[in-house]
Length: 259
Ligand code: COA
Image 1 (spheres, rainbow, N blue to C red):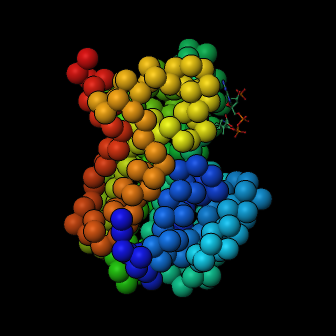
Image 2 (cartoon, helix red, strand yellow):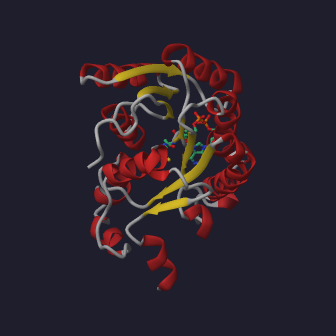
């Protein structure tokens, strides 16, 4: 749907880029001319994904890093600029979560998710900033959140607080860094049918149809829907969009509020 050179000359760093939505975005970016650096905790996984992208004709690299560790993140950012010459797009996709009633959540469990999701996003934005502001085409930071971070997320207070925090951080940076020509946005995906999470939580447990009916469109999204939104926000197509939360959820949250 996009012209093949939509992201030509841009370099993207994608956390959690070895699987799922992160890999789908990396694949779309590589096809549209960007160089992509896949960053993740599991080195084998990001290496294998980068190899597949390269074999398909893209320009891709991989780097092991835990977003909780600022030094790891900074090293990954520096390696990206060294390999590809610039950093123009930061995609904060890495996340951790588990279901647990708040009364039973240990302080370390809370801290673990806040560390991965919220602190990890801050680390990436902070380490990337000096390079992003030198982008010749204007830079873009995109973080994957969820509207559950706005509405509240029973049984996942840690993730809800982290995602709400990322939304607030993104709007803050949109204003602070707008003068550096860095746009900062979030994407809120709804239930995406071809992800491992939705397969495991809804489809394998027989709740697929019920969950589909909770969306206004009556169906699950596809990873491709999120990748398309991420292309729009990263490219010149979204050149005047900043501080925005692009909701790609088939109308799920509105239906939740309305009913
Ligand atoms: N229920 C309750 N507490 C849990 C838990 C669960 N399912 N999973 C982790 N915790 C708690 C641990 O008990 C521990 O706290 P404690 O020391 O007080 O017992 C704390 O969280 C840290 O756990 P640990 O396993 O050491 O953390 P980790 O860094 O290895 O992994 C996650 C953390 C979130 C990545 C892990 O839970 C996980 O693999 N989740 C599923 C995968 C995932 O999140 N995918 C992304 C979906 S968005």
